[in-house]
Image (cartoon, rainbow, N blue to C red; front, side, top):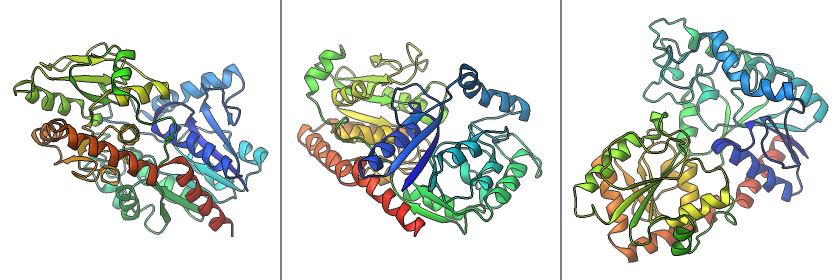
Length: 413
């Protein structure tokens, strides 16, 4: 069995990590698999990227070029949006690779919608966001127009029925028609949203979570981790991390800042500090009266595992997450997580069993959950143990790879 994976990049974001871990997992099971990306930064021999400097430059410029052509400029949209309009060379890549199955991951910015009709092969598509079943947005938020035919897109600030989102929806309806296409949802919430959409209502949607390398992400000595990272050893540390969280409002840092400010006004003021990563901004602009350690962008997984292990609790204040990769990584390192009860997060956190699910989007309850984890060390240790156990049981790479391999065989037979 030969599988070709496609993803926008090899090291950026949760989708990239999911694709590379799955590649490793299925390869260990004897599947002949390769990953082709638009932007390659690593040196994995199983991952292919543009070989020429021109190809590499176009891979980075492609999203910007498309946004300009389609008029999707920052002043006209209030969130990520993609039309998948520019031509690509994926048909030639598939023809040269001759796989049995093409497995798509985050491909919105590396392909033209109509290209899928050229593959003439079974296609599996892991939905790392909502883009496969919307008229162009990644996170529809409160909008449910994807259940019909999009149009009047709030993300485009549009009042027209026949706007860009409607036209993209129409292109997708035509492009998806007649394909041997199986969608994989990493969470129950994502599966529910996909099945309620007009584009995927009659499609095959399977539920398989994203994978994590439990050998890399594992509990480490907390004191040693803090000393290595130059973090205080006599404070309770709350950890938060997300790529570009200062600019991305969906990551909810403004809500965490409010919750932490409430801690500053309590008897925890001198006992608790916040550690952040993922943004290159030296210090968060929101005023937090507690001490904040900003460690910037962290791309090395071993360093990330050490960082998770150094914390007492991980906070995820996101408004919308398909699963919550950082929560999974924290739990794998034995760090209990506190998050809003939204999206796919409940697939990870069992309330008051291995973490805490706060009421969306009540910062007082988020603050309450953080203190609930911290105020009793015996409880925190029990949460830590159960968090690790759940990740090993349900999200380890070998288990997730087995589920995908079984799906491939089912599709081919």
